[in-house]
Image (spheres, rainbow, N blue to C red):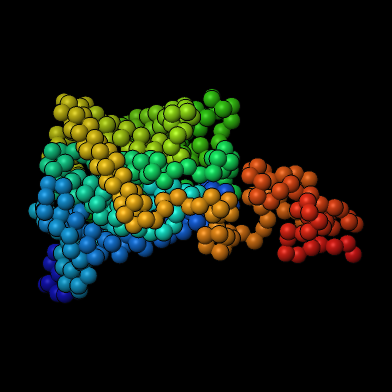
Length: 484
């Protein structure tokens, strides 16, 4: 019997899984990418980088519930966008979730659907921020986030997922290879060009200040991706299980492939390289997760661990490519990997997987549907073009109409967090150096940016009793250890 607490349309299992999946995706951003960004940059940028992600998470949610959710998943307004509007009443939150442009009703409330789709929107722009770290004016970022979600992300989401023209055409994007990763990779690269580069010495030496933080963030990304891809059937279905398994298989294969290539080319395995390989595997399997077989996931993982590796380590080091300061290589890990996954799903999608995901597509090229390959290319080209145009327009609007500089001043870039936020990330000295108190008194800052000058000191008493100085006779530390 139906009741307000348990209406007839509600499947409690599906609702529980959808909320769990949404929470896993939310954890990828908060704290996943917040922590990863704090660790992957120089110490002087740890707070600013983490706060860019933290701020975006909050700003996207308000944008989403006030107008953007309906742009992406509401009534059809145009072939590529829905009718904007708020979703903040109690009736909105309690009623059955539907996708009106697709004539699809789901077995959980609209509030669950709103939150589930929000965490995808949030992580998209947080991923993009990886291309802007270490120099974007925070005021410009505050304005850019809601504008980009409104005019770029929502358009891509409706076109592919909300019942727009790309879904009608038959483009397969299981969980965001195009909507999220191709978008963020393209927009990140274009935005980085508009913003301009970091200080030259920061570009030449930008050693991570905390590799442990990077691994913590990477672990949250990998495990959180179970919700990222496993939640997109909108039910606790067999295909959700297939998507989770294929996600992990492709990611493991990509990580191993990238690591092997690092060993062959650089003669040593790199932790950060393995993390890049992991990310590329997660990205490339995303458009295909529940529609390819396990062997297809292995092939996608091998390709995502090698083709983006070549893009980043060979193409990315050419002078032409270095003109754009894409700090974390978002173009390679998300644009290249996302486009690659979208193309490969056109080849390796199975008819059985498509049916399990409630698609009418008769599989990909391996099942005799060669049309799917060019359909996927059309979808990729639209998303790339959309993000080149909209990101450029938004950046120009902020810079020339709002008169807000996109890039920080050189003075702010010299100092970093303390200048921008009045805060420092850690209570110990330097950009990852060993403490002066441990006797490390005879070398320059390891990043060579000269912020603190040459490290000098004079020993008094035992090896443990050191009075550090900065070369001018004064002590840069707040406390001194003196001989007894």
